[in-house]
Length: 105
Ligand SMILES: [Zn+2]
Image (cartoon, rainbow, N blue to C red; front, side, top):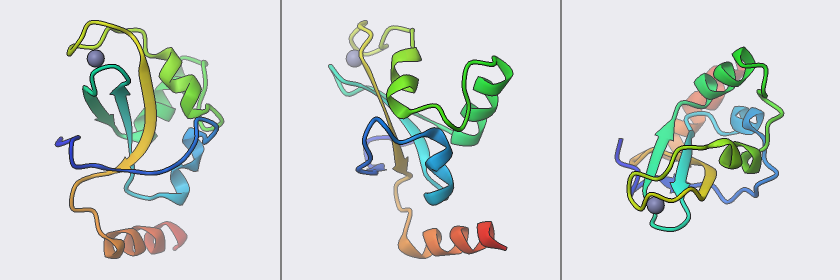
């Protein structure tokens, strides 16, 4: 996925993975703080994985998610990650409304 043009949500590190329910369609974006290399993930799948490992889930904060990433950055080889929610490129307000309605029903 094209992570360069993703629209990052202005949430702090205290936001939790469970907050994804307020932002349907958003993905979890893991970005290297040093060089900007980034990769995005399906939030539900990350929550499921943490629950399987019994090491987190919906209450896990974005700051904790970032610190859990142990692999070195493919771009610069260092380990300093940032975790954020972001909408994929081209994701519109209309998409947001449609997904929000689907979630409600
Ligand atoms: Zn890097």
